[in-house]
Amino acid sequence: MRKLLIIPIFHTDVDMGSFKEKINEITEKQFGKVELQNHRRDIVKFWEELDKTIEKRIKDIDISVLRIYQDGHAVGGPFGIKIANEIAERGSRNHQIIMRLINKGAILMKTESIELLKEEYSLIKSMVMAKTPADGERAAMEYKKRKDDILKKRDRYMAENIDKTLKEDEIGVLFIGAAHNVEKELPSNIVVEKVFFTVL
Image 1 (cartoon, rainbow, N blue to C red):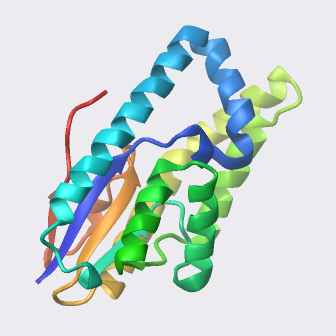
Image 2 (spheres, helix red, strand yellow; image 1 turned 90 degrees about the vertical axis):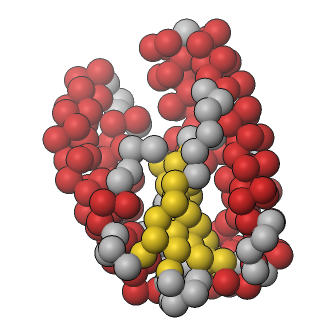
């Protein structure tokens, strides 16, 4: 039997990479400083609770059969671990959890298509880094037009990749942004369990 634990996540500032400052600026302008601070506090609570939930869920699992899939990761192996460790050291709770699992014996897997990630990155960059309001509006319209199609393609790629790489008697853990629906694209011979809890 193959099993996949799907863990819907919320990204932190650290996960936004080079866009962090600009996205925070836009968010604060749109929702206000207090709302942004409340959101950050809620995200911290979310990751604290998720950390505890994951520990409870895997405590009886042989860690050597655990395979980690992470949205946004287009490489596995030593280079993938190096990237994950660098992001963890910058303060990403998501990647700190991943590194702890790796250090216990879990394996980090390639998850995404680099081409699709580059396509989405380019659209977001055009929108976030626009020089004028008019440029920003055009970039936002282009992103809105293409984002659903890219999301579906990413989900399909991830599902196909998990199907190819998750072997019999292995358990996958997929950390995935809440907007995705990878489960819909998975074959029926992978048993899916969603890890849910309420904090936000």
